[in-house]
Image (tube, rainbow, N blue to C red; front, top):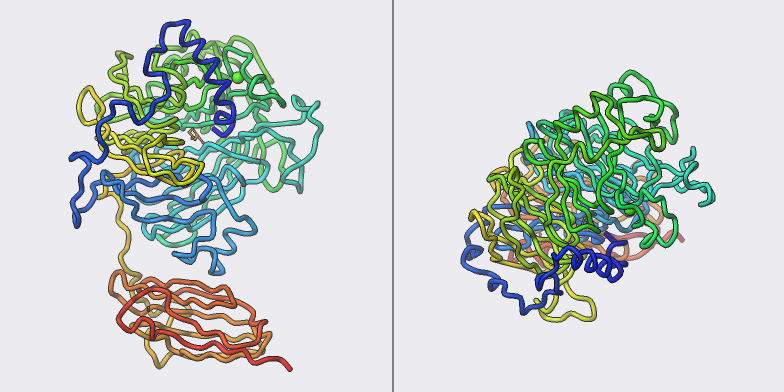
Length: 626
Ligand code: CUK
Ligand code: CUA
Ligand code: CA
């Protein structure tokens, strides 16, 4: 998307010309402003009275904030920020040994795609996986605790963009956006750009979720299964098949031209780009049988050119971005950024063509399918289509970035039903369950990259905006609410609220290692220069509340909040040693540091827990060496 933003004017120009030629561009394509005839925001359909609960959760990408943002729908109230790739003081993320280790030396992530775990093709409310485009990582978020429980670095990829899962969420699939050379022991290996076509690769990674091995709150167990070499194109978005398309996974790319400079111009010379279709069962079978072609940085790599039956190239109209599979899997919907169309590929025709080896030619050693044979329809949705979601009534919704609108169309009849303006430059749209086999419909959120005059100004950059549409009617979509959000939003997963069942307290568990549950168990244990503090907290004190160590000691504090009242969080905050760790009711948290600075360090409870909250403090003393 970033590239698209940079080249917005150029892209606009090309598209407007195309649009004018085919008579598509009417007044809708003009830049919308606050004068568009949108319904007033916050209409009764979106009204959630004080004290009333929302009917849906939305887990939205927090972009460069590195967070997953949790909203209530339809109120658009922010309920929680779940830190994934960044230090976040309110939840102590990046302050405990486990979370420090998860983050490593990285100080940001670029969250694009929160992918909801599924069982039998339906959202099951257990996990969300999110990618980090910036640093090629994938993370697991546990919806029982609303916390990140794993961050996994993926070797041999730099900048991976898409993420998708199969209907049982056994696997996750992702692909490099930026092709690059691969080499043992290196993350960013060197090869001259002149050797691009021979020495650079696109990489597809298949991950196993191993989700059956994970108890709620336990670290994630996502592991790398294998990687596939792919032509050095720039892979954009992926969607795993389901239903009729089960076993396939689809990847778009916008640069089959293999441009390495002036990409804005040079990646737009072909009318069709060669997208990738992978038979992941066939590839997994090879990996399971121990068949692979090389191991690089610990990952088994399969070269699909040497194993026919794994990967195919499918030509799709100009610089496709999103690819989305209809709930029954019968239709694969490709959105062409630079053509005002979505192209519908028939899964039945695709499977037939693969089975009968009806290929046009070979490119990069991979068979190329004949698009004209597979195409079911091409729908004129409007200018700059990016992503499509589905509802439970047989309708599809495609975002139009350039036109700043959402088009509603019908599966099967391929008729456009409605188009509504959004404000402004929409990226993804999200519908509850809208990428699964069981969409719930009713709401659609447009995750816009900007807003024009919709909110009070906050300096030279505008807030981005998220706009809520009621799509429950059979024809018109109605704008009912909107809110500014964190830059920059991409995808979101929306759930009916009853699918999400977080714990309200950590149950008291005396067998939990290092926890203490009564004041007589509070103690400070010295072992050489290791000082271990077993501390508890309850309104309104810490026990022990005085800790004295020698300069140079290594200190570990296990703090157990023995409260069992929901919402009763305490926390330990201490300046001088950069300590800030909240403990939710019933939780045991760990603080680990070396007391290398002598002095007196008051610590205090960071959460206003009672009338005696401020009295809830203690002293940490470090006796100077000399
Ligand atoms: S991408 Cu952002 S609007 Cu990273 Cu899903 Cu299409
Ligand atoms: Cu405990 Cu404030
Ligand atoms: Ca292209």
